[in-house]
Image 1: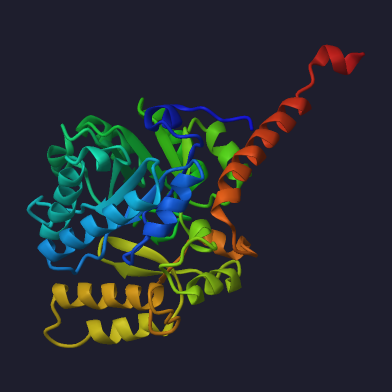
Image 2 (image 1 turned 90 degrees about the vertical axis):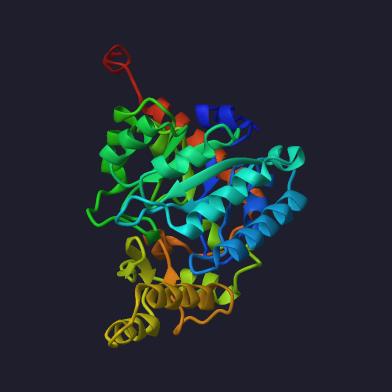
Length: 347
């Protein structure tokens, strides 16, 4: 089949400019392997943000080894690296980053684990840990100045994530069609566009805005290739309608979700005297996992992008990824065919 070759595909040595977003906190090993096997870039998510750092790092290494057993192709690990008020990366983030850096010291792992993606804060502190590891460092931003800062900090690529995206989004909303061209104009490194992309039309649009690839989250969750998550979650995504999504205050700012009883329970929990940030973090982590692992659609918290209202069926990743590229190529070719010169029109 014809291919779309970009700096993203060339730097990673993969077939298609399609990436699976970091999800979680429950594991995404099988999904990541499926996306990579389909020619895109799959992403393994961390076990959670309330794990004891050493235990969490050991569990993440287990995820990495499991992914290596399921694919021979490149994949990524995503780690949030928001900093505290003193500018330090939290202990769990440092432990997870170090686990990834240590993992690629194994040459067999390094053939597959090619990318680390960071999010939820400035990348500088994590960058110091990653530099020299051989990993390609991709950092996620929600604004143009953040993208410029990340490039100055030395990252290799940017994910520009518009306000439509699920999970953590931005306190100052900038939508994808505004953010994409602004970021691609402002930086020289490759840009991956995320937020509101669900098919080849979105990929074609992203390329037209100067992006080198797209990243999708919700679309891949609603698939036959995400067996680690409870099927109730995918079913809830398919049942969503346009406008059903809402926001709540997560660890790193607003997070886009589908409504559930858990948010009312969170507000009640927050109002209790003496509740600590640690207790709130654990509550949120546990409720996210309750939805993803256990299928609790009322007591759980359900991150979800706005594209949920446009999805009607589960996909098979092996067919979807190359099919998305074929659709994007067809869209580009159709648009080219519509371009008619004045000379031809006059005839």
